[in-house]
Image 1 (cartoon, rainbow, N blue to C red):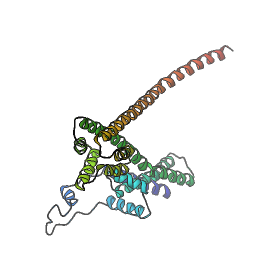
Image 2 (image 1 turned 60 degrees about the vertical axis):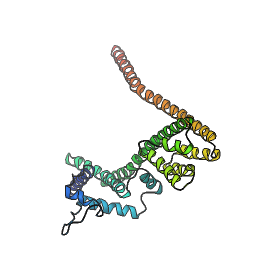
Image 3 (image 1 turned 120 degrees about the horizontal axis):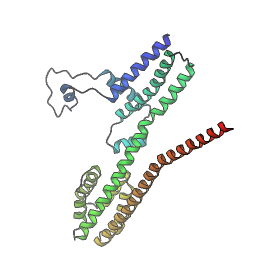
Image 4 (image 1 turned 90 degrees about the vertical axis):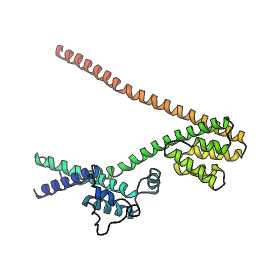
Length: 297
């Protein structure tokens, strides 16, 4: 009975912590002002900064422990930097998912004990360990999916940048002017391209090495390939225009092929429910025929 009470209390605390983490309370004006850097807001003499909540302190300590243990890995850290996210909130999310994996089996064990179903403690511990281990890596999977979406959007932005640059070059503009005009767009990738070209102009260097470094940092291989092709083309406008046009056409073809494949995969997924429904109807008719035949026998 004591074990049942402890499990129920632990499950309730875990669910409460999860809800607080997923739906954080609305901060007051004083708390929001406290998060602003002191250099931006003049400090008021005698004002006491509000203390962080218990859940924030607990999550921060758990995240600090995970960070000291070497988590996350270098690849995950690079993905977080790519998406402009901090490491500690990500580790806090991983710890919360692991805590949920521990609390769910305990809550189920408590519910079964209330209705009179007794399970061995080893089953509870094994289920809690397995579920906590699986949920611990759920944020990594979500982060990887977001990174893939970001890079897909980045490739589309690079293709648009190349189309605009080729059009501007065809109008008689110079290479530098065409790149600056093509980089005038919305989104983080366009801003990064514009910053790279601006840095190259400030350093009086060709833009291609800067674009190559940007492509490696963002994980967009097409941008690095463009930089390599244009570096080989040199400063001749005709060759640079030809390289940009060829790369833009290649990216359009790849994008069209990827979209066609995605549409075909979606069509196949839509056909599965109809096929399962037809199979179920056939099984129903077969069962009725077999049942009638068995009664005649």
